[in-house]
Length: 228
Image (cartoon, rainbow, N blue to C red):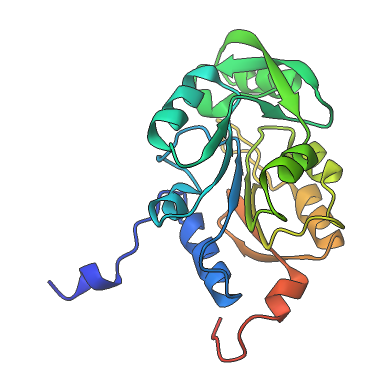
């Protein structure tokens, strides 16, 4: 009816971020992207990389929660799924499992803030191994991922500051840049936006919850006949 099915692309992200990333990658000539999903949570629902997996692409999913990790392994067998966290150092850290598992975090401060709103509790504290983002990129990508989805609940800035942008230049990042609250007092995390701009990434799109960044050089080299 109305030819709608021919035009329709299904999004699995929270606000259509996967479709925006797909469009960007298409414009810069990447048709089979490799992805790194940090804080993957659910393998399909509200997931920024399942759209690409469904198209036959492959990548690496990072999920520290053992319960959520099992779901990733079952649903995303072509991917490399790692039951670890990403921080600044290789070690093991306390991992705070919240009532809503999508809010799990390695940050005690963040966990306690979430709990203070009243609807969340720290259900358990696990000891989880963590690795650095550069170690994961070196080990699993040749030479780099094309798309990085980052949602580390309070540790995003720490991870970005450790990333070796001189050695690895993913074309696209999708990063959560909105604080979580339960009283409509959320704010944009402008430090992340400013930092990404300082390492020569363009803030291409913003869905309020997430900001999508594109490597400036890659964006300038997009097809001359392509319309934005």
